Image (cartoon, rainbow, N blue to C red; front, top):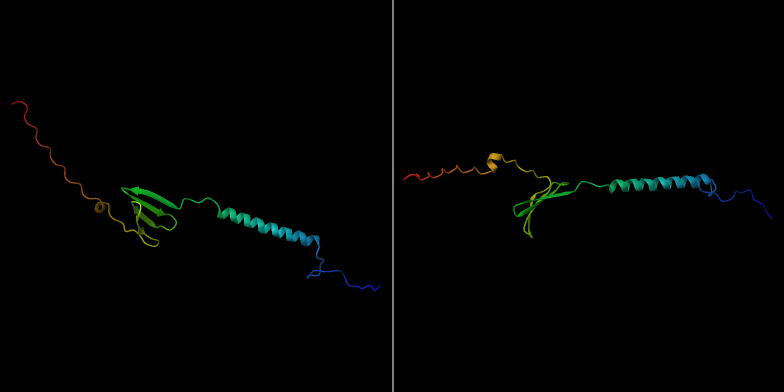
Length: 116
């Protein structure tokens, strides 16, 4: 029987493959990666404010996308149009120009005399 002075099987870095410190390091690294994934998922899935807001004006429904600023107005079931898209700005209208001027009050007719 010939004996050789060669050591047993080794890993690439020269340590035996079943080293307890190497296994512990791999487990800790795997645990940190899983924990970071869970934290990332929790941040991504957190509740956010509502994205859309809607209100009714007469027979129209207006929907505002709070994330992009897009405004869509719909009348009835089918007729919808884009009022404002991302990057556009609304022009301010002075209040006096926006509302029609009220009509002057009409004088009341004179009441007939009651004693005749």
